[in-house]
Length: 83
Image 1 (cartoon, rainbow, N blue to C red):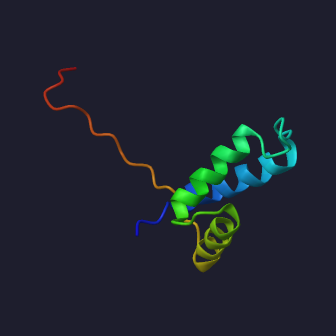
Image 2 (cartoon, rainbow, N blue to C red; image 1 turned 90 degrees about the vertical axis):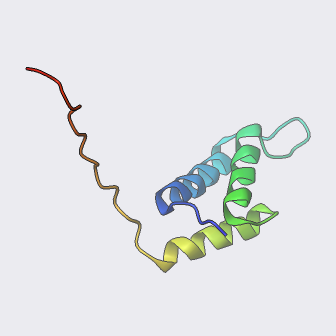
């Protein structure tokens, strides 16, 4: 199974937790659309079908290793450009 990049996964977990706290519930008393979207994305990212196991898997993966720091990629000058 493919694993999401730790930085992306951390962002999803943080955004989901913030949405749960801040987003109003929908008309039926369920989670709002942003919370539902983030839950779905977490489930897809972790290969689960429910948000609770998705969060458990995400937290376990994040705890297993350090979050890599993105390394800037140098941009090469195009060949044949005259000054």
